Each structure stands twice: as structure tokens, then as C-alpha cells.
Amino acid sequence: MTRPLQTWTGRCHCGAIRFEIDTDFPELTQCDCSICRKKNALMVKVHESAFRMLAGADALAEYRFHSHTAHHHFCKVCGIYPFHRKRVTPDYYGINVYCLDGFDPAGIPVRMTVGAGMP
Image: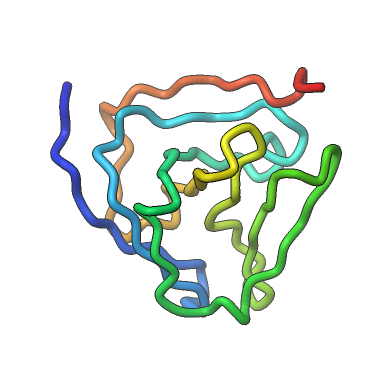
């Protein structure tokens, strides 16, 4: 099912971090790496040109592990993970769809990705 390209706003829990993305939600992904399992995020992949930081760059903290390539961002105030810069495709962001305002993931296919087995 092809969906129209839409602009979505997102935010962390406290609202310190706000961003905007353009996507047609071709699929959602869940990763099996250690951090993704623990944060239980459901993600959509968007190119960096479809991502806009609206507010809160100063409220972002970053966590890197294993290869130190992926940049996992979270809010310093409320601790919510809104997005990360991807390891394999660093010009893309993985956006936590649960941070998108009014988004309902029903009906969008979910693909499991292998992160735990990456070298």
C-alpha cells in the first residue's frame, strides 16, 4: 500500500526536543541489538534531508557503543530516545515513531532488523 509523503512533527516527553520529518512510512523496523531491545523503539528510516531539528539541540545527549558509529540521541531532561543517526547508512536517521505527534502504526508492516549480529 503506497502512502502519500507527509510531514510529521515529533518531540520527546517533556517537549524540550522537537523535530519534523517527511515520510511515506514504507515500513517500520525493530532492531534486535542490545540498546534497541532495551528501549523497545519502533522506527522509521528517513534520509537526513527529510529530517529537521526544530528545537532542543542543546537538550540532546548522545550515546555510542560497540563500533561507536551510530549516534543514539536522547533528551537530557526526560531521557526519551527520539532518534538516532544510523550505523550502516549514516546519512539516514532512525526515528522513534512513538515520538511522532498523533501517529498510529496500525497497518504499517514491521521488519525485524539484525543489529546484534553485526560485526
